[in-house]
Length: 204
Ligand SMILES: N[C@@H](CCC(=O)N[C@@H](CS)C(=O)NCC(=O)O)C(=O)O
Picture 1: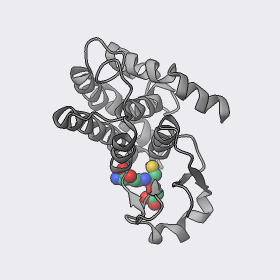
Picture 2: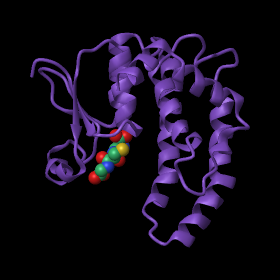
Picture 3: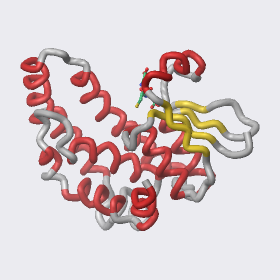
């Protein structure tokens, strides 16, 4: 393998998109290996944890778990704090974004429409509000990013995670769910307006 390879579903979303954005902003020339859903069952048992994304670096075994991938890219390319405590603070917020996915994820599997509506409306008015309030509490005052003036991998993760809700793509979860959290929205907007991020989406 001549260059790093990132394997994920063929969609500009979620955990895979965070890693693609991080590699792109780090100016890493990588193989953006996009998997069709039909090809996933055969690949799944060959991945480290039965899930994607997976990052393969020349000379290293495949690496899975999104936050580990993001922290590695961040450390190697100046997109994660050097200060150990600040780095841990960023990693805590990255886990918090995974908690957001774990709140919403189970509702994707509810087949009954009325049951799904009830579950999501309850989620939007309770747990998601609590999630947003906790995120808001930990974001730096001045900004525009999570830790201040400099974009880090945690910001990419916050943007992709909150975009899922803010896009309105989730039936019965209002796009306005996080409107009461100005710092969270500030991070989302600053990432969307970042020149490197805009260049990635101009290319897509
Ligand atoms: N904790 C893992 C979760 C990975 C995960 O659940 N990935 C999803 C896509 S976002 C996946 O691989 N789904 C297919 C499956 O589990 O079979 C991580 O952070 O990478």
